[in-house]
Length: 413
Image (cartoon, rainbow, N blue to C red):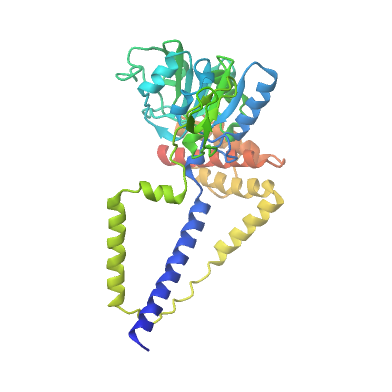
C-alpha cells in the first residue's frame, strides 16, 4: 500500500471519529436540556411558568389588560410607541442574578412603566428554607433563605428611590418595590414565586398576577432572556418617506413602521463573518498541528475494550421506574419510598429502624431535636399514608419536600 493510500485511510478514520463526536455531543446537549428554560412561560417543567401564564391569559380575556410574550431585546421595547407608558415587563431570571438597572431601563420606567424581576440575588439568612408569609392574596409559600436587607440599595440607579416591602418577615424582605419617576421596579429574591410546582398554592399565582397588573394595560413576559428570538426580520418600506427600513416592523396600534434591531440571530454564514480573525487563525493553526501529528504517528493496534459488567440491581430499578411511570402508579412510590425515608429519619432521630413509629411520635422528635417547623414532615407523612393517586406535579412536590427534610436533618444532626 502506498503512502498516499495510508494517509487517505487515516484521514477517513479521523472523519468518522469527528462525525461520531458531533452526533454524541448533539444528543448529550439535547438530553441535558437548556438551563435558560427555567422560568420560561413555555416550559412545562416544575421550574417553568406555563401554568401561571395560562392562568393570567384566561384572566386577560375578562379583564381590562393585555398580555403577550416578548421575544426581542429590551432596547426594542423603547422603539414601539405602544409601550411608551403603562407597560409592565416581567423578567423571570433562569438563575439568581445581581440587580442591574441600566440607564435605558431607568429612563423607560420613569415614563410610567413597570419592570418586575424575579430571581435577584440577595444574602442568605438563617430563615428556614420554606416559609409561609402573609399577603393580601393569602398565605404565600416561599422556598428560599435569601432576603433583601434594609440597606440593600447603597449605590446605583435605586440609591435615592423610595422603597416599599411588599412581602417580608423578620429576616428581611422577599419582594421590594421602588418608585422611579412615574414608574416602578419590583424585585424578588426567588425566581420560583409562581412556578409550575406551586399550582396548589394559588396565593402565589394571585400575588404575581397582582404585581404585573397594577397598571391594567399591557403586560410583556420576557422570553428573550430564555433564548427565544423573534425571527420575523425583513426590510420594509415606510409609506410616509418611501425609504427602506432594515428589519422593520409595523406597530399594531399606530400602523407606523418601526426600525428593527439585530438580535444576534442569523444564518451560519453571517455568524462566521462576525467571528474575530484571531479565532479563525487559532483554529487553522490547531488543525495544521493535528494534521502534522497525524501524518507522523500511525494508529496503534485495535484494542477491544472489556465488556462492562451489568449492574442487575440498577437495571431492575430503572426498568421498574419505567413501568411505574407508564402506569402512573404513584401509590407504589409513596408506600415504598415513604417507608424507607421514614425509617431513615427515625434512625437519625434516635427512634430505631425496627418498625415504623406513629407519625405524631416522629413529628414530636423532629420538633424537639431540630427546632424546625414540622409542616414539611407532616405533609410527607400524610401523603404517604393516603391511598389516593397523585398527579405528576404533586409527586414532584412530595419528592422535593423529602429532599428538603433530608438536607435539614443532615445540617441539624
